[in-house]
Structures are given as C-alpha cells and as structure tokens.
Amino acid sequence: MNVLFLVADDLNSWLLEDADRYAGKVVAPNLKLFAASGVNFTRAYTAAPVCSPSRTAFFSGVCPWRSGHYHNALQVQQSEPLNTALSLAGCFKRAGYTTAGFGKITHGWDQKEHWDEKLGHKRDPAPPGAPLTPVGRGEQDWGPIHLAEADMNDTMNANAAISRLQKPHDQPFFIAMGTFNPHMPWYVPQKYFDMFPMDEVVTPRLRKNDLDDVPPAGAALTAGKSRFVDSVLEHGLHKDAVQAYLATTAYVDAQLGRVLDALDDSPHRDNTIVVFLSDHGFHLGEKHHWQKATLWEEATHCLLMFRVPDVTRAGSVCQRFVSLQDIYPTLVELCGLDRPSYLDGRSMVPLLNDPDAPWDSTAITCLSDKSRPERGYVTIRNEAGRYIRYEQGQEEFYDTSEDPREWTNQIDNPEYSAIINALKEAVPSPAEMANPMPPVIRKNNSIGE
Image (spheres, rainbow, N blue to C red):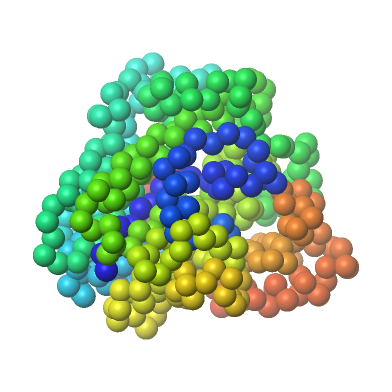
C-alpha cells in the first residue's frame, strides 16, 4: 500500500458542521467529499496545540510529555527521546518505500536523510502596503494577496505533489504534502473572499468575561492574544477576520482537492492510503483568545480523516476520542511495517474497520507557557468532559455535554468530583512529565507559532 499524507496548518474543526461549536458557512467541498469517502474522526485531538511540538509528536511518535517538547521556542535537539526516534518518513524509507515531502510537514524536527525528495515551506510575501488592516501587526493581518494563485507557495507545493503522483513508481511510495495556510497572515486571492459576502459571515459566539473563572496560569496563556481580540472587537473587525479565515480555508481546500483529484485520476488510487489532518485547532475570539496555544477545545480539537482501500467504508464517522499520536502506529500496522518499540499512541485499525468498535476514548494534550517554559501543563478530553491541570492546584473542568463552548469551569462543583478524580488519574503526573527543554535564544524569531 502507498501512503498519501496530507496536513493543513491551523485549520480548525468548523467544517465538521457542528452547530454547537460554529453555525456559519464553510466552503470546503474537497475535504468534505474526502471525509465522506472513508472514516471521518470527528473527535480527534492534537498532542500539543502549537505547530512544532504537534508535528514533532505525530511524526516522531514521541508524545510531548516524554520528549519535553511543548513549544516552538524549545530546542528539540536536546531531547534524548527525539534524538533516537525514527521519523514516520524514515520508517517507510527503511521498509523500501520512496519518500517525498512538499510544503509544511514537520517544523523544527526533521530527519532530512529520510526523504528521497523534499521541498520545504515558506510564507508568501506580504502584499505591498501591508499591514492591510488597522489591527495588523506581524503575522496578524489579512487581505487580498498581490500574487497570482499559481505563484503562491501552497499552490506550487500542491503542483509538486501532483507531479510526483503522476510519475510511474516501481516501489511503493510515501508522499506527504502540507499547506502553510490557513496560518496567519491570511493573504489569498480576492475570489476566495468573494465566496463569503459579509452579510453571510457568521462569527463564533463569544461570552463576556469568559476568563473570570479561569485560573491565573490559564489566563496568562491568553494575555498577549486577548489584547489582539480587544483590538479586533473595538475596530468592529470580527466579521472581517472570520471572512479572511474562511477565505483562506477555501483556498487550502482547493489546493488539497487538486492533489486528491490527481491521486484519483492516477493508477494508484486503489492501493493508496490517504490520511488528512490538521496539526491543531484555532481560536477566533473564543475564550477571549486568538490563534492557538491554549488547552481549550478551540486549540486542541483538530481534523483527522482516513481512506484505506478495502478497509474503510465510505461515509463512516467515528466519534471515539483519538489522538494524532495514533496516526504513526496506524499507518505502520496498515502497511505491515515493523513498529518501533517506543511509539506512543494506539493503532486505530479497529476503528477503521468498525468506527463503533470498543475503544478507550482519551486524548491528552500538553503545553507550556513559553514565558515560563519550565512548567508543563496538561489536559485530557473524553466523553466525560475536559480536565486541565496547570500548576500549584490550578485546574479547570468542563462538562462538555452540557457546556460545549467550555464557558463554565466546574472544578469546584462537588457533583463532578468523581469524574474529575478519574480524569486526574488518567493524565501523566507532574513527576511523570518530562521537563520542557531550554529555550533557543534567537535574535529574530520569524517562524511564528
């Protein structure tokens, strides 16, 4: 079996059409069509809600609470578990596969010798006159791009993946393609903005004073981005920002659709496993936050879809709680490869065969405050709700069945004490969590979050 591995950056779960989370219009016909062609995991969660640690975790098979890699600013080369890990691409190359990667796949941790062909990612140049919005600063900006769509980096990376799929192959292949978008800034062609007339744009529901029952450590994670939310709201730009995010999502869907069409038009469709995921979620004002790097639903919930010839059934939906850590062991089992002994996560093959199969539904996510990287925080999400542990007794619990937007922290409600205690026991203890690695000192950190 070949593997086509597709990943989008910062793409949240709005296209799952969950009205409890977001009730607006999302234009993503290609991803929706792909989701309907196999198994759509609607309750998938990242191991870390930031680019580098998330991608390092699912591509190395080592979870953050063992590697100590919780944030972009941490030095991955100083993690012993990562130094001895075999990348997902390396596992396939060792088994005789040709490997090719195009665009944003890994971030900060890679083993370049494991790729037969590799084309990295870079941002498109900002339009003349940027920032284009009165709140724009750094990467936090949006507007129509000055480039032709054909000249955008994600388009060219999709072209490279398509070209590779169209070539004859005398060995099985592992081809990965990742989009930089919808990472900010949101600069895409005007036609994608036009798909969302302003009178049709729906913003996510916000709650005033939503952080009042959040402990200090949790509120500290939002501090810088809360000021940006205030600026967006004060300038009356919430709809404009959501429109830009939706427009960039539609652009990403178009590029991924081109790659999926190329596979379907090739002789490889019937013996190629396809997996699509987003590396984590994204806030657009919820919990008074913007972007990611929190332990709430918006940042931790992500997309995950599998299509496996002769295994998955079209139109399948799995509502078990799974982790992106489960991807590596799943692909290894599906392709009959030797499984590295150190892998975290579980093979999802039973769920690919039967989405309702028995499953211990848990998904753990870790993070550190990058201003105090010596502290590691953790959350767990399952049918019972969400539990978060920060430090020194600072905790949160949300009954997500009654409170899907996580508006009310029930940590001190005695009615939930049994559930909370069970969730506490299911996450790594502070003593079991690896210390975050020391930060890298950079004169100019241009990689963003």
